[in-house]
Amino acid sequence: GIASRKSLQKAGDGQVPNLQRANVLAVKLLLRQTIASLRTDPLHLDCSGQILVDSVQHYAECVGRSAEDFMAQNSRDCQAYAVYGRYLILYNREVLSSCRRRWSIAHELGHICCRHSCDGVREEAEANAFAASLLMPMAAAGELIHRGRLRDAEDMCDIFGVSLQSAQLRMQQIEQIGTQLSPLEERLRQRYLPVIEEYLAAPVITLPRSRLEPPPLLL
Image (cartoon, rainbow, N blue to C red; front, side, top):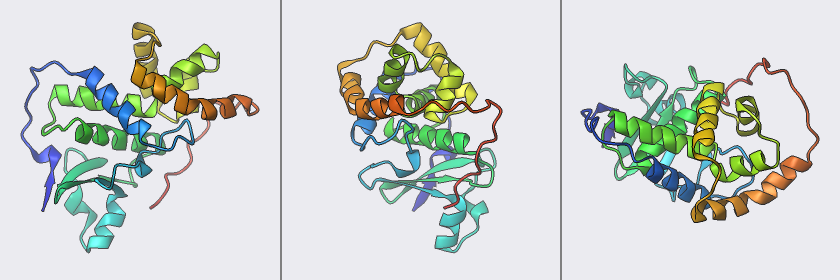
């Protein structure tokens, strides 16, 4: 029935992460979506019905079990399960902020799309690379950098709805590798252009950087 991916033995720590493959898989997943916003919503992605995302509280209520039954002691924020040939991602709405929830779900999607069977160093690096490419795609970020609207990590936070730490790491990566796009990413950029044009045409509203994040959406 249900088997937690995190319950499997850790392995593969000596292997080199394939970050390029993780990026390609994230780009391919985005190309399957209807691009209507710069902020990717990992809760409602089209995954051909193979991946269900739900809060652990709601899912536990639906199946008549305790939420504690689905929470590992070492990972109480988000968990991925294999369920009869499909995948289930359960997030804890009581402990996750909006930014962290989106990142945690994107990270678990990365494990699934990369077909990981364990949680070694290589697997974690690939899942993080996948999450960064899904939530802060180079196809959109690079275009906004060229247009002068994405200048630093704080802009990245505001535009893509990610944490400051995630944005800082992504900006460091962009500084290292540049903004040149692969043919696949160029296809994605074309899909993002109408959304980017709409974003650039909207009036700029400056909010305090220390503003409080809205409460998480309850499902």
